[in-house]
Length: 453
Image (cartoon, rainbow, N blue to C red; front, side, top):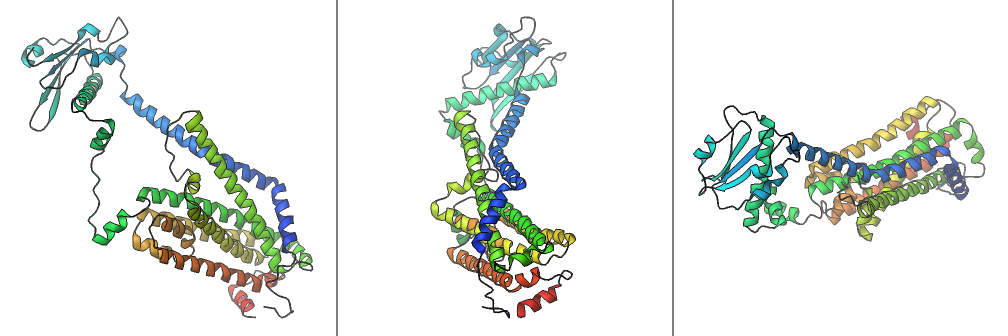
């Protein structure tokens, strides 16, 4: 197709020169090199930060449960068990104080059965610094009663800590007597998850899902962050570059030897290479840091998919191709949109408005994808997967997680590709005219008139 000057508006003549020059300038620019380093470091630290956070939380929880026998006022402990569960004095050795001047002595810990003593007799023997724990079995289950003297000097927290420790000892012993494994215990204490009532169709759809709701949410979040980063970097660079060339009249000189479309495509492809480099290096740094934390430093932790961007590499080659193709489609759409917005700018104030406008669309797509993934409703997933710009983020992960069918995903891809083609055609029609427009920022009506010509 040619314009009224006889020029092929889709010509890419000179595009390779623009690509090479832009790529060189990008990797020479201190700002972009700094951004690359920041992203690589940020991705590398995601796993370790989460690991340290988990350990800090675990240590805090452990600290609240730790007991300090050397600080005890309690000097003697008697456990009266009226059950068949076997317990011995050695099971309570962590309560023994290492301080000779205070706390419970080893010889002052007694475990008695109902045949050896009665609760009434032991209660009468209680002193101000002694505790009696009585374990019984009722119709409702096991009961542990803590008894102290009327004039006890033992603090409530200390009594509670000792009782909780004894409760844990008793639970472990009764589980051992039932011959239950650690896996069995985890299942028992985990309880039962209750799902909402569902139809046959919903049940089979739920049963065949690749990822559960939480994994789907985390994978969608991580993918959305990657897409948002890619579109943000391209939007900022392309709008700024196009606006500067227009204001400095450099664009007019360049278009003597380079076609307008080639000028824009060269910039976009160079920026795509930069972003792919950022992504690959960031994923590599994330993978290396997680490997070192687990296999070298010995930290046992689980990284949330929302923070572990190497989840992309855990998919098979087909899935990896789908994810990367979707990232490129999203990048192309927002890059060409940025080119149009940038070429319409006439002054510095317009640049800020153009950047924020494109970024707002990208951010709406990100937030929409996040909330839709949280809801995880089949119908909503399907509808959002065919509506741009949400579809750029939602559709690939929804398809790979069995939230949408192949048919819906195929329709989504066709719409996305059509959107990219449309924005490319619009760019070809109006990019030259907008770049050479020295008047005030054109209105939407004027841009439509450019398209029709």
